[in-house]
Image (cartoon, rainbow, N blue to C red; front, side, top):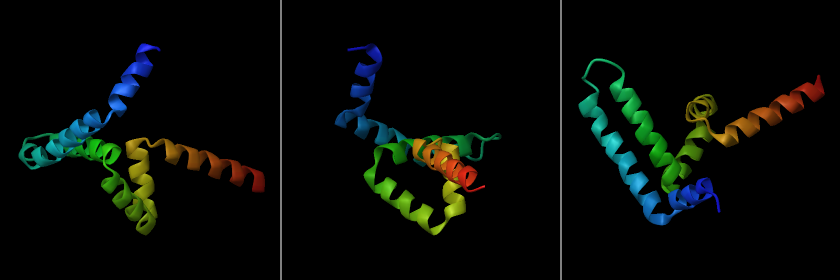
Length: 102
């Protein structure tokens, strides 16, 4: 078993998932405190927290899917910003089908 595989197993464990979820919520909670400081700190802090929560919370994933269904343009932007693999696959499939139909 390689080191990379062991790290992935560790990160996928239930206690680690809950820890990362708590850290994500902590980042989101700290955002209003960091926001008034000059610079983009609040935006970056919120983005990191939202990414951690979305990756580790089934509830947040369901809300995200509903949001994307209601607002497709915003959903594609958030997919791009989160660098989601599912978005990359959908874009590749869309490019293939559009090139075949041309």
